[in-house]
Length: 422
Image 1: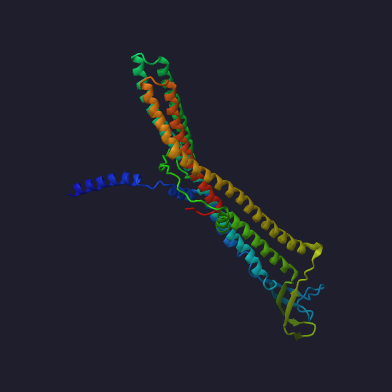
Image 2: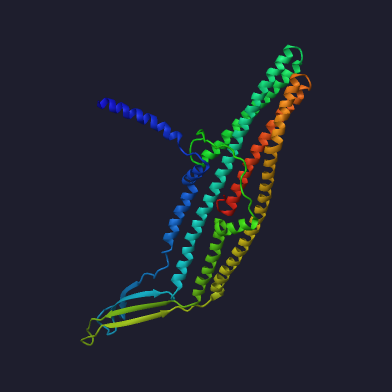
């Protein structure tokens, strides 16, 4: 009984393992998620973020106090500690005190680094999405080209049968048969070239996933265009709210403002407070025990702006703010140009897809069917059949290219706007 149970368990495991492998989600979204998990740049930035968080504590708290221990009033002729009344052992503690608010200002500057690195992480993630999507859609298009070329090859095989039958009965020349075979060879060569491109694209995708080049990556069926139209102003608003690069520029501008505020504290004095205890011993010259002494010290730095170094720090931070403002406006200008160009291309691709799928492709199929029928009854030349068949392949290939190009441009819009578009 136990043996039967063990065999049954082994059988269940043997069945479930391949099923779980087959049911693995290989959609574009899962590929992007896997690429994000495996990207070493993201891991590096995450470590950099942790270091920046720790760095906030460095130099933003009170400095350590300074303890002093020594002797004062020691006569140089005897170096005796009980010869003079002013000789004593000194113990002191001094605490530096920066101007109120200066440490807080320094911590505010350092805390901005963590926010900036978070945006750098988001930007790398955004780049990964765009890279994976670009390769995925290219792989989709490549495999569709292979499929269409094989379908065209099957049509040529049918045409070849017709040409051979006509040649056997003397109604077609040997040249017709040879032309079909030559065209079939061209298509087979095209399939081999496409297979090579597919391997290269798949290798690049596997590289982003940090896995073996030979692992097969499934792709979904290319769907007709059904996306909505986007306005440039709308996309710019999305980019300002979501694009990590723009957020990073704004954060750098804010950081420069905080650096200016921190630099202004250099014009204020810092303080130093100390306590000094002096112990005196029995004096041989007077025969007296003198009381111990207690002293309190207060020091103030004099913020002299030698050479204008403090003013230079303030001006440098101010210029950085202006530079980031200009960089932000320039980035918006570049984005506006990209959005306008991509929107125009999306509109063109949408119109072309409608024209090819609803008009040109049905016409090409009808033309091929009519040409093949006319050729069988010797109404037209064989060349017309070949042209009609080739036209179908070109239109279907162009249609697949249009649809994947539309998806690639949408992916580029998502990258530039920093958000996913429906």
